[in-house]
Amino acid sequence: MGNVVTGSAQYLTRFGEQTIAGSQYALTKLGVDRAHCSLKIEEYLILCVPFQLGFKRSIFLASLSKQELAFFQKYLNGIVGLSISLNPGKRLEPAKFFLRCTLSTLGQMKGRENVGLFVLDYKTSPDEMVSMLGHFMENQERLKTQFEDYGKTPIKMTPDVAKMMGYNLYATVAEAGATPRRIQILSLSSKSMEYVESADTPVMNPGTTVAYQLYFKKFRVSATGTISSSGPLPQGIIRSTADLEFSPELVEIVDDYWYNTRLNTFQKPTR
Image 1 (cartoon, one colour):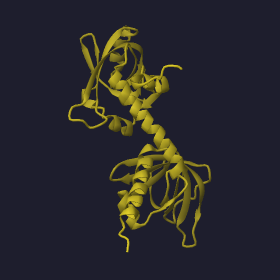
Image 2 (cartoon, rainbow, N blue to C red):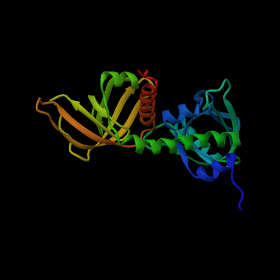
Image 3 (tube, helix red, strand yellow):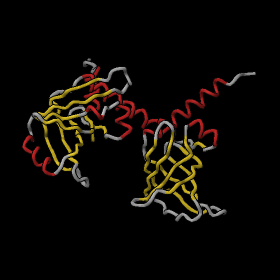
Image 4 (spheres, rainbow, N blue to C red):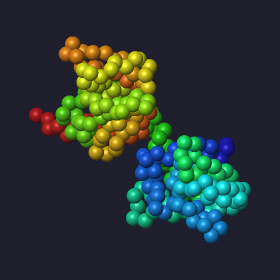
């Protein structure tokens, strides 16, 4: 019988080649302290922000002029130090790490002047850091399963439901390059949304890709969707439905809603 891989080693086996996009959601969940994230290159200290976090390799953003970007090219393939602080469990004291890395690539971020991308390969990966990233990846797997499950039952957005979900009754939709428009949500699931807009709104063709912003107390949810149907109702307002891509923030909110719904059902007094 083979040895069972446990602890941080199991996370390296399962997720070692994957990366975590440095979204606001991920950085908040991991408790990344942006004020204490930096690169040490000889006597230079460069403040940076995670763009992608990995178990063996990561990419960081830093504000650099073209002259600075050219200057630091001479350190390619050299050893640099990475200081990063993580606190995913909101402990009293965050975990602080200092990693020796190889600076594999340094270049300008596409479309962002004066922003450099540092690609770092870790010499070693601390067990505690691996475990923190691994727990995050496990949670994402769970949310993706819930994304499918909670997509089967739309939730009608009544005032009581909005209150339970912490929904601030404000949401917008926007096509690529267009100004966001306010919408009124009629129903919502982890995978779909039905909503209405004012009568002067143009009808969108099925297949149109749109971006949504939904404002909840817990998160401001950014979600990408594809229009499945759109057209005027008898009173003139425009009703649309959309299929949503995976949004961990939205899945968490829907999960909280169904949990609280079940909890309220169990707590109702019996006669």
